[in-house]
Each structure stands twice: as C-alpha cells, then as structure tokens.
Amino acid sequence: MILWYDPYPAVIDEARLGDVDDLADIHATAFHRGWHAAEVEALLVQSGVFTFVARRGVPFGSRRPVGFVMIRAAGDEAEVLTIAVTPRHRGKGLGRRLIDHALRRLYHDRIRSLFLEVDETNGPACRLYKAVGFKVVGSRPNYYAKGSAPPATALVMRADLT
Ligand SMILES: CC(C)(COP(=O)(O)OP(=O)(O)OC[C@H]1O[C@@H](n2cnc3c(N)ncnc32)[C@H](O)[C@@H]1OP(=O)(O)O)[C@@H](O)C(=O)NCCC(=O)NCCS
Image (cartoon, rainbow, N blue to C red):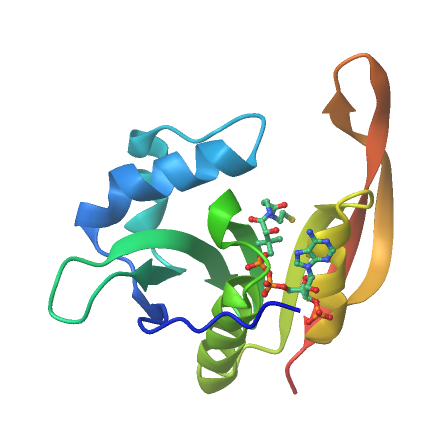
C-alpha cells in the first residue's frame, strides 16, 4: 500500500464570481452536458443558492478550485443542484467534505430536508450520499439518456436534517 501525504490539503470555502470559469470547467469534466460559465454565474447569484468550493494550492499562493457543490434552498427544503470533483482529485475525500459543509450550513439555516437526484448506476455518488445519510425516497425510470444504451433510472434521495 502506498501512503500518500498531502502537504497542502484542500480548503473549502464559498464560491466567488471569479470562480465561474473554473467551476464551468469542473462541471464539463463531470457531466455529459456541461454548464456554460454564464449558466454557472446565473446560478451563483440566484437567491437561495449557495456554493462551496474545494481549492488546492500552496498557502498564500493562488488556490484553484478542484471541486464544488451547489445547493438551492426554498422554504425549509433544499436540493443539490450539482456536485463535482475534477477526475484527478476524486477518491480523496473532497466530495464528502463538500457535502458535509453543505449539510452543516443547511442545519444552521434550519432547513429540514435536502433532496437530490442521482443516476442509479453512478456508484461513487450513490456511495457518497448513503454514507452521509441520504435515503432513497423515489425513482424516475428512463430519466437519464445514455446514447445508444437504454436510459438510466434516477433515484430521488432525501437527507433529513432535524
Ligand atoms: C461523486 C463525486 C463528487 C465524489 O467525489 P469524491 O471526492 O471522489 O468523493 P470522496 O473521495 O469524498 O468519496 C466519497 C465516497 O465515495 C466513494 N468513492 C469515491 N470514488 C469512488 C469510486 N471511483 N468508486 C467507488 N466508490 C467511490 C468513496 O469510497 C467514499 O465512500 P466511503 O467513504 O464509504 O469510502 C465525484 O466522483 C464526481 O465528481 N463524480 C462526477 C460527477 C457526479 O457524478 N456527481 C454526482 C451527480 S448526482
């Protein structure tokens, strides 16, 4: 087993407008239909939306985003609009840290439930969500187009924050 020590672990903080291009790039590496920078920017400034970013880099130097989670809250419910980590930084706990930050913020804001939709064949995402307490509360068959393969089912998941 190789033990890997990271001298500059990622920090998590809130997104800024200057992050828009990086967030669009990260999204494009993760999803078939990426978001344009303009779409990211429109969501970033939308009322009820907050975004946490994982940044890597040396202290006091520039820290580039390598992952982000975007949440929209309305009333006492919220939904995960997206979560993505760049491929070379996956599997190092960043997705978990991003979701944990979002859950803490929602708990602080007295939001009662967080919803999301996930492709049931997306193993890493399903594992991550189950690990932080999401439960399957519904499904939408034939929801995600898969090119020539049959469309995949979306699982609707909910985490209760009370
Ligand atoms: C889903 C995603 C955000 C997870 O980010 P990440 O930083 O790799 O996740 P973490 O390292 O925090 O791992 C979280 C859990 O997922 C598991 N996991 C991560 N990568 C995995 C892989 N390739 N295969 C299986 N499980 C994996 C980890 O084992 C961990 O579970 P554990 O704590 O029980 O061991 C990332 O894979 C991603 O960006 N995927 C593409 C975009 C996407 O699918 N987003 C979700 C849409 S609903």
